[in-house]
View 1 (cartoon, one colour):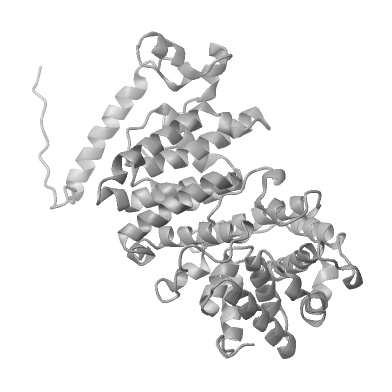
View 2 (cartoon, helix red, strand yellow):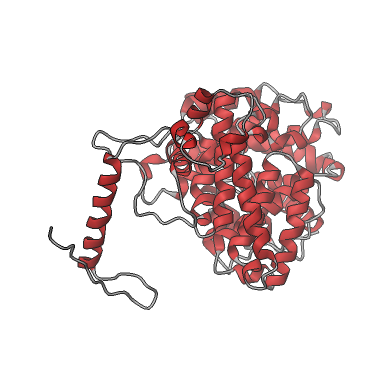
Length: 483
């Protein structure tokens, strides 16, 4: 039998192979080993458990049959030639098995828009840290569990709990280390804990994690030390602003990023808190009345805007992905139009809902005009519709001075006034709404137009469509001199 030949390769100071011929040789060896592994018989989960003494996640599941356990995590799908959909050269921060590969495959191939924030933002920045990686996978596992168990609480998912526990142990093991305890990975993991507590409306856990995150970042030297990681920096502000708005906090916990630090990041603010699939769990339930029909509408609109912003992130490489269904937009316009409240009937209870409804109509009208999908009725009267809704908002908030009754949810007031300001051609009305932006901004401790824009962009906003108009109308309007 001939002796095996060894291939000697050269590496750089970081241990990476740079020679293309050497890389080609290494990939040939890897694919040969992968081919051999795929030709071996694959044992079922039950056979593996029977032949090992290792306690697995499924051992803790009670009142379930073995057949049900085998169905929990199937293997990722394969093609006709045995090739999978996963990149065999992708490096992960932890050893991966078929269960983890399935979750990654589910993330990238399941057509649920609620997975977009994980796919676009959270997962890509998590693959550099074990705890961060486990926490994101924990939430993907909870999504799989929800799909298979309907309305059952995803907190009952044993695999999700196990992955979350691994993330917790990994973070705790490093917190006492003066270097590892303040790393980007630890900060990202604790932020993920807070974001996903926000997503499930577990506010006690949210406050606990945000307080821990604040102490870790202070030990690091402040948020300015995260300037080399702009995605993480903007995720921190996004989660913080969402909590500030819907928990009725007076101002954000962390200072907002400035335009000079990363100007393009304002245009494409990442979606910080992944939305749940069910409207009754939506974050909007904290702003609207419990029986409000706007809850389901805003849940659908939030999903639409989340998908649109995700598509716009990939516009340069995949322009064909950016599209909006005309029928969907028509239905949303109809549902919002049916809930109109006359100005004379506005009360303290209906003030916020009616203003949010009008602002959302402005949002949808401007997005529709960008895609040229307005139907004939709206297309012929687009300007009149926008003018009518802006005028009604102006009457409610400015003329009738109802803005003084806006006690809570100041970021929503800033968002409404910003949308109205960019939607009107009247200089007088535009100035009134910009004054209202400054009024709301000062109550939140904001220091200028850029911070007000970042706050608005964290709501229902499309930076690629609105930011240019916002900058054009605010550049000649002084924040400091506004009354």
